[in-house]
Image (cartoon, rainbow, N blue to C red; front, side):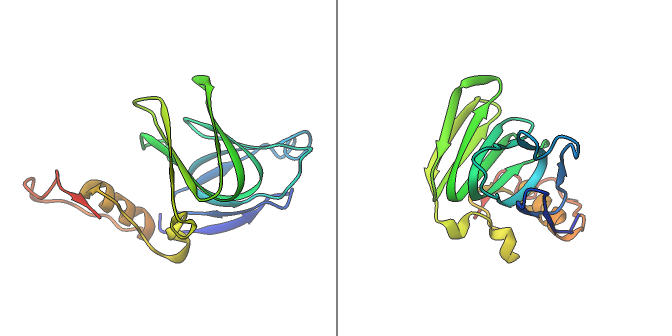
Length: 174
């Protein structure tokens, strides 16, 4: 909690990890026939281009296949949505529960997978808003206070306790 780090994988891919993020991969098989990792949390990827070896990210809800690109991926197991914000290149998102529902994302677009509906929605974004946490910023759009406080806790390694149950729990914050 409150810690961020940067790692470089054996294939040259650079990954900035946000707080409370876990990245795992098999050191025996990585970069042999493909580059496959598992992510729980949020990370900004700068994937090394290699057309012969696909780069695949497994999350709790989606599989992301990458072809040399930059993007932010937020896929926390305790959240009902998975979000990909693409800056450069292309990524293909696949719902393992519904493999026919694949989405190819292009730059300056965001895809949000909702676990409740099983749908992937795509909309346009500014690349500046792809990963505000890299600039030390927290950005919220119509967000419940509990989510805002949880993100502040995660980013700064602190805890909030709400003592009054009548506090604005239904209001949304931007």
